Amino acid sequence: MIILAATPIGNLGDASRRLVEALQSATVVAAEDTRTTQRLLAALGVANRPRLIALHDHNEKERAGELVELARDQDLLVLSDAGMPTVSDPGYGLVAAAVEAGVGVTAIPGPSAVVTALAVSGLPTDRFTFEGFVARKPGERGSALAALAAEPRTMVFFEAPSRVAATLVSMAAAFGQARRAAVCRELTKLHEEVARGTLAELVSWAGEGVRGEVVIVVAGAQPREVAFPDAVTHVLELVRAGERLKDAASEVSGETGHSSRELYQAALAVRR
Image (cartoon, rainbow, N blue to C red; front, side, top):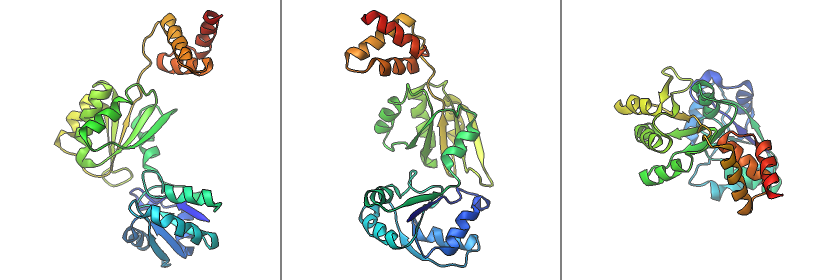
């Protein structure tokens, strides 16, 4: 089968016993960067030297079929440079091909920059969305963030340190300068830092430059203050556009904070 194994995102002490055991017994490893995997083996004191196969963004499409067939006969351990493979890292194409071919897939869980940043951000954790890396080009970045302006869930983003300041400026423009956020830098490492505040405050903080691996966590939008009758009208508009009444009531409830059940009943009464 295919075994997706999470590796430390910074602190080697976070390597799980299952990861070490898997590395000690593996005969073949598909790695995002074989040099990084060699360093990991040495750092963890693993004497085993499995066959290493490069699996990265530039060759995954071509290599997936070959690796799936290999995994029919023996376990294939899959590693990214840090964290869980497939999460903003290579592996998704391989897993999709394996599922299609009926080859088993399992995971050795472990460190995750997404969940770690969310946990220490001080922002709501009950519902969140992972948005991956922000678009590099300013226009595309602005459009993508504008589309998330009304997102009620906490949002988690990856970003390169050289673009953090520009991205925070774009976020302030799209979400408002008062929206709360956290920039998590060098998580689990010696110089770990979490800067919390409004987007305006964080823009100022990032002005002198940011170093290291970065995760940005942004609070979701607050429900709009919409009068109940107007909310019911909006529900009816969505129904006329083709949505089911129940779905429309749930959507407007998320946007306004009004009870989904009360919106449903009020809209149903008007329709009758």
